[in-house]
Length: 104
Image 1 (cartoon, rainbow, N blue to C red):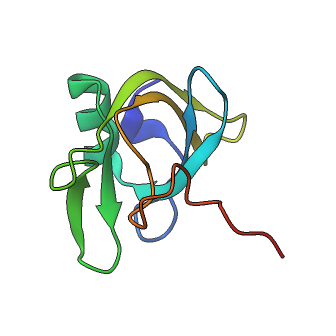
Image 2 (image 1 turned 60 degrees about the vertical axis):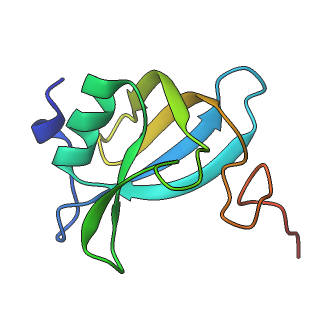
């Protein structure tokens, strides 16, 4: 599968669920574009697209909390990604291991 053949939305983005490859805990969800998908595959570390800043961002670039890519999967409709990673620190900007630390 070529990253450009994924089913991106109208903004050229695709959601990516990030999961710890060892514990299987869901760490975060972020958006990717074709360029960030290719960078992630090439560099084996996660890259995303910031909708608010309208630019690429490398996870952990400022915090040091990088995510080493173990595997990048796509779903049956090719419109959602799953990144299995080995994290180096918390995924959430709040300092929590996962962005999904709150319940209703």
